[in-house]
Length: 127
Image (cartoon, rainbow, N blue to C red; front, side, top):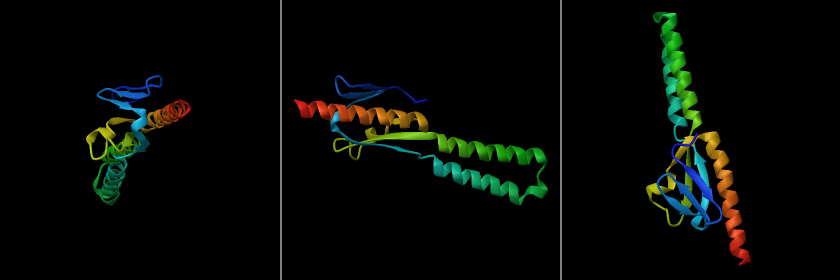
């Protein structure tokens, strides 16, 4: 799942998102980050630690709910990803990291983008 749209047009050498179009020849690097992972780990540790310390004062249902929230935070943090397009033109702008979605989906799209960039450079070199 990707929030918004992400289409690769190899014939025109562009990447189209829900808001912007990027020319693939200007993109120098494509990377994926998990910005919510640290928050998920800290939340997991905090809620889990709280439940572990106060186990004798909590009902079993409360311990189960705390464990469920902790696991959900960790799972959510590990699944959310952000695709970043690095370019000299996009440096120091908010446009370089506008594509959010599930980490696995973004990894597949990153491979497609890199293939499209390589194909565009190959076509450019043969002309």
